[in-house]
Image (cartoon, rainbow, N blue to C red; front, side, top):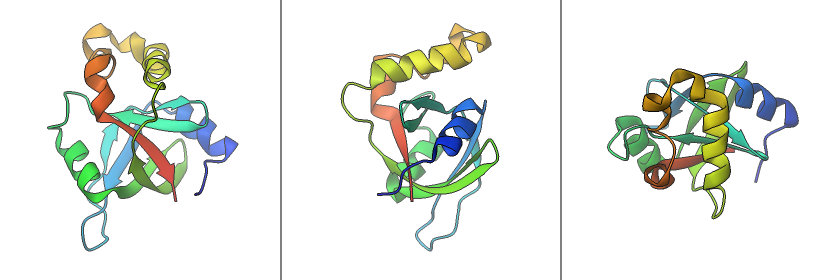
Length: 124
């Protein structure tokens, strides 16, 4: 399994926004969607605001693979599950990075409702 380099983790983790695209069955990329990204340890995570019905999330879970762009880094990824015990740290990372946007927005990606829509970005 590939890993993120220290530079990639920093660049993507420090970026305010990430562009994410899932792959179609024929291997082509769908249009990019802009979302928030956080770093926790040596992993990068995204969460679907407003739940599992969000179209980008449904497509990403169905395809299992795509590409991300942020902080000058572009990388193919697979979409994985977050391991047990990381969600509290992910919540803290979202609060630390994005609370300046206000609770109404941040609360869409933190808390128990965000656990099932958490995606670990795994570089390939």
